[in-house]
Amino acid sequence: MDGFTHSLPDTLQRARQARRVSQLELSLRLGVSQRHVSFVENGRARPSRDLLARWLGELDAPLALRNAALLQAGFAPAYRATSLDDPDLAQAKAALQQLLKAHDPMPALVLDAHWNLLQLNRGGAWLATTLMAPEALAGSSGSPNLLDMLVHPMGLTRPLFNLREAGPAFLSQLRAEAALQPALAPKVEAFGALLRDRLDGRMPPAAHPGPQAPVLTLRFATPFGELAFFRMFTTFGTPQDITLASLRVEHMFAADEATDAVVRAQVR
Image (cartoon, rainbow, N blue to C red; front, top):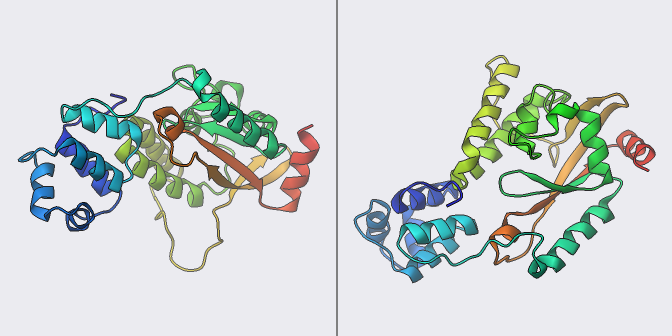
C-alpha cells in the first residue's frame, strides 16, 4: 500500500491535520455532523464508499493515499498506477520531455512523489555534476533520489551557501509531505538531523517575520563562482492515475545575470 500502514482512522486524521482543516470545517464541507466526523476518526463509525471518496477529495489527498484508505475501509481501490513507459501515458511522457527541452539550458528535472529523479534536461545534468561528487548522484537504493542527495556528505547541501535560510523552509515542506506520504518520513528526518548538525543544533524558524524576497533563492558555491536559482513546479491538472498525480517538473531559473551567463556558456 505504498508505505501506508496505518488504520483508517489514523489515515483520515493524518490527512485532515496535514491540510490544517478542523473537524468542524470538514463536517460543513461534507454536509455531515462534526460528531460523525469524530466517530469515523476514532473508529466508532465507518464511512460509506461515497462519503470516504468525498472526504478524501475535500482534503485533496494524494491518489495513492485515497486508494490506501479505500482498502483500509474494505473497498476496492479507485485509481491505478500506470508505468510511465506504458503506451497509455505516451502523450503525458511526451509533454514532460517537451517541458524539459523547452527549459534548456536552465536546469529542469522530473520527480515522483518520493523525490526519485526520473528525468532531467541538459541543464539539470550539468548542474548536478557541477554541485555534487559522482558518488552522491546515486541514491541509497541505487536509483537517483533528491532526498538522498541532500543528506549525502558530498551532496546538495555541501555547496549551499544559504543553508540556514533554505534548509528549515525545505524541511517544513518535506514534513508536510511526509504526513501524507509516510514512506518519506525516514529520509525527511535524516535531512532534519543533518540540518541540526550543520547548523550547530540551532534551527532557525522556517518562516521569518518581516519583509522577504518574493521567492526563496538557492545560492551555491561552484567552480564558476556563486550561482543563484529560484524554483517553480509544474504538475498535471486533474490527474486520474497515481503515476501522473505523483509527478512534478522542477524548473530552476537564474536569479541573477551572472548565473544566467554561466549556465548559457556551459550548457551547449
